[in-house]
Length: 176
Ligand SMILES: [Zn+2]
Image (cartoon, rainbow, N blue to C red; front, side, top):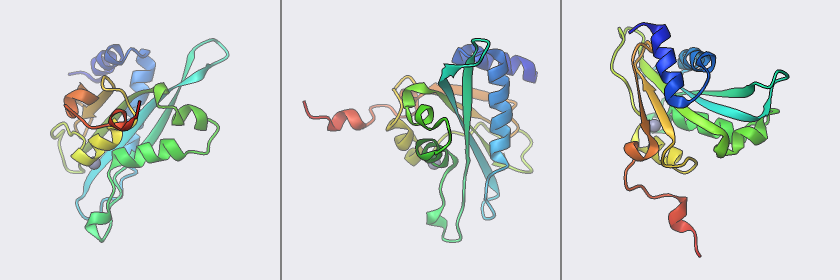
């Protein structure tokens, strides 16, 4: 499928302007380059799209992009995935958009991309079980998670609930 058509379909699905969908994909591709993966050579990037409370001077909605990537370690178990890197970054950010980033009600979607450098397209990737649980902590069950293949030529969008059905979350620990 042609890239332009891809962007348009994605924007419709996420109810965002076409130019924001286009920028989301370019930021996502950029995020993959942040990967530190000398052991697996499997680079994963993640982009959290946030709709800010403020608008631009011409009244347009203003979006932020928090990027993350997988960071491996010589002690393999100490590695961290792109999705969790991204969420931790958003929640602990000290930039001017800190308040907006930390408020998950402003989060529009999480997008991920991944593959090896020599992958020609490759399969669409999906978040691991640990990351699904971490994302679940902060988002509603209908939150969209967009998964791409290595060169962003294919994507699939699923909700949090589709990726983690019958999940355990913060609502189970609230005492009434
Ligand atoms: Zn993970």
